[in-house]
Length: 147
Image (cartoon, rainbow, N blue to C red; front, side, top):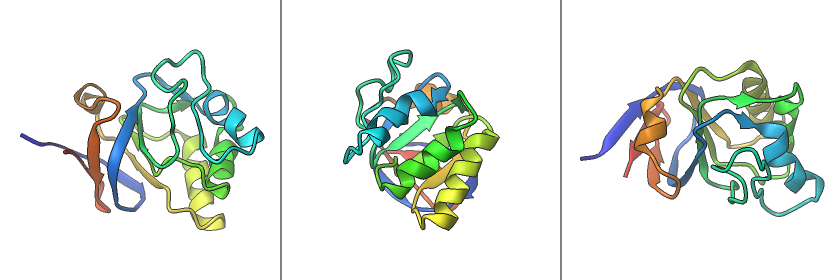
């Protein structure tokens, strides 16, 4: 039986593919900055304190997480990786999106013409129901389906 989660749409879009799941808050600076500063063609998670994402390709996947954590540069880091076109395809939050991540995805969508998807309030059950590498489908209406 397929599992479906419904969240609130922050930035709409459609996605079908693999996901990476972070069961703890995602430090955007620690996770994305190294790849951005080195002008890489994709983001490899570089937060040694988050084993869920450390060393994993995060470009073009759906990143499922509770919230982002860390410094006030978080929104700028998200906007920057979107500008570089090395961002995750979707940020799917189990909890309410934090203000820094919200500012980053909204600025990226409007200023960088990014196609990043952001959905929040999916519920904490999604963090245990989905595993890294699972295939999911994201709809414009905020539905996330485990395939």
